[in-house]
Image (tube, rainbow, N blue to C red):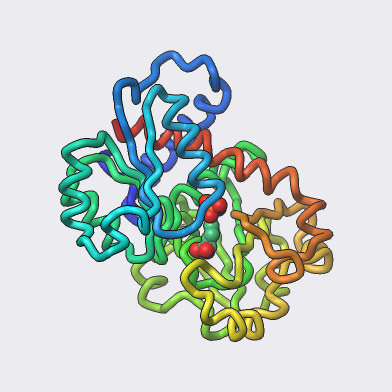
Length: 296
Ligand code: CP
Ligand code: NVA
């Protein structure tokens, strides 16, 4: 495998091997047998803010023996209009790999094609594959397997994180329920293309009943700030709360972070499930090290 651009492009065997390798990375942190990025220099090229993805990739690349530079898109010529295909051809001649956070999925695909170096999608408007692979690892780590898994995604059902969940459910064969109001549901053609056991409803309580995971993400994704008022009004109530959790006893409550208390999750429920939520964040490091190892 040369690139990690989406969950859509992975098959179940590849996903399973990333999850298995993440477990080894976690249990052998600080005493890995081999450092596969030794002698390599990678770049993180980000057009959007990041805490977890940036810190976990910078740490992970170094822990695997590599060097890393952070390039804010606005600080390089890309931000002044240099095309991605030219940026990629320059970086491909100097670097050994790139981790890209941007808007358009086509930009990471073009970067991968034009640079010829291993390229990782660190979030686009379409997918957030590293997040969902880490979350699957957290679920396996907690429950032992994906068998019988039923994930309910609450909130903006058409965001990048929800879309990656749709592909993960299709590839791994678990049940996914998306609870979102009209206007925030994933498009029918995407659902048809993905297939799998995925249902979409505006009925939050029905979607939550008996789920094994209750998952949410921000109501206002990066790049959608101008729609904030409309989104907050429309998504009101699509929130993980104590009352919602009572419909799914024992469910893991998960959040990719950053979290907005009082919006997609109550402060009380966030703190009650902080151990799981911050373990999700930690597992970004271990899972992405597994991905890096697989690409070099
Ligand atoms: N979950 C996640 O990707 O967080 P950051 O935006 O902080 O990287
Ligand atoms: N859907 C969110 C995810 C943040 C990690 C966003 O794109 O801003």
